Length: 219
Length: 417
Ligand SMILES: Nc1ncnc2c1ncn2[C@@H]1O[C@H](COP(=O)(O)OP(=O)(O)O)[C@@H](O)[C@H]1O
Ligand SMILES: [Mg+2]
Image (cartoon, rainbow over all chains, first blue to last red):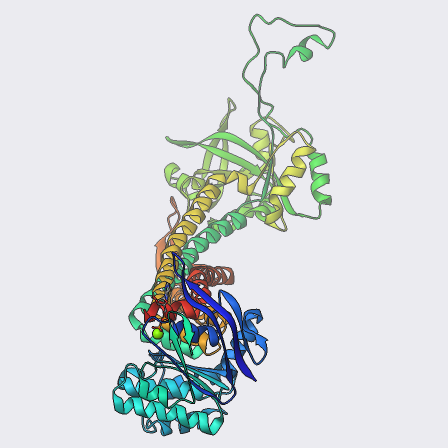
């Protein structure tokens, strides 16, 4: 069980420019991979292609042996719901929902809102928001909002977690707390994690680093 | 999804309320305006249908053509006749040619409820110095009362007192005033160049309409005698069991008889063209209101979709499908539409109930006043609901589909850069 990318190219924009060139890599179960590289090197683009949100222009990506490009919309949304968690640089919480409701949103999609409720509360407690379950996003600080987003990405106990500079907008204390969460999740649930970061300290804590420059992997 | 849709709506209270108001006004307006117009129309139709016969069989008036009289004067063996003075004028026997066959036909037709043969002439009524020229109708009172409601409009005396002969007459209220005659007094009746004949007034009716109150009714035999035309009739009024069949019946009978046959609705065609105009106006008004309301929904949803792009992205990224997104926005529009429609219908209903308590002056020419007649039928209400809900579905569909077509990656890329 793994995510496998083979000869992935990605062309974006008009006029078309090549953002990723001939990327092949494999993320095994339980791995913790850091994607590093300069700004504009293609880290985010690669992350979206690996995580099924985007499709490669050439080459293929398979998750658990299934070619992502060949999945039906229904299969794809199910995969995202049950197997994959996302954390973005911007947290994308829904402003009208409380912290707990935001965390439970993926569970609601698959009718597990009740059964996952306790787990969602425990996740929020672990990120230090046990007393702020019913706050709306605007009543939380930026760091707190990002922690809610992480709790949301974990509520379905996904096999894969993709995070795009989750600490980018946070101060060092909050950044450290988020990093701890990811490490614990990787250790305890054997969740595979792909983390985009340009902070060398955090990258060094991953089990493997992949360095990108101009859309190519530098070994 | 439903609760999220609700929260979206609540979070933009003012816009939601305004949109709701649009649909609300559309529905309430439709219900009230329709109630008013349809009620009025139905009232008038009821009046017409109950108070008058449904099919009128009359002698046909033809204008003479140049050669209409050739055969009568010269037989069929003349090739061509040259008239020094061309025949002209009306071919006017003023009679139904074969009334007996009509009676047979009417007696055996199951659609016919009642019929009344009549002889209508122009007459001069006078009492001492006062005189008035009027339409005098000779009829058989028992038959006449079955085809229209004149008998029920008698305010003094009795319609049936006309009897089957004996020079008794019933006059309208207006005529009675003009002649200054009282019940049981005599008036003189002259038809054409005949001699004045005294008639005794046995009844006075008041229909509420000035023109119909300027007429007079007598026994069929008496009027025939006045016109020197025994057994002649020039009209048969027919009441049907179902007035909706009038048009069809009239068309049938026209095909198999020389008489001129009219149904109650063609006789009142002015009224029906007014009804059609009212109906058209009603639809136009409601169409405009619904268009505005629909546009409101469209705008609000378009704005919501634009502001909630990130939400759409995250929802799709955590596994919601395009159809869920479609539903999320469609539901908002639908909820606005349904609640606007329901509250509008309810308020429209209450307004209608209130209008019912008001009084109005009767139709033009009438001398009575009545409560407003407001229709409250189910059809109007379901039409309002269907219209409002259809408008809101229509208006919410485009923005909702636009939202569902978004892909998360486009939004995220656009947002991060
Ligand atoms: N929609 C786009 N159209 C054209 N070029 C794009 C688009 N998105 C990103 N790029 C380009 O692709 C390159 C990689 O972008 P990205 O993956 O966001 O880099 P990183 O995340 O490493 O900063 C950049 O040079 C960027 O300008
Ligand atoms: Mg990036």
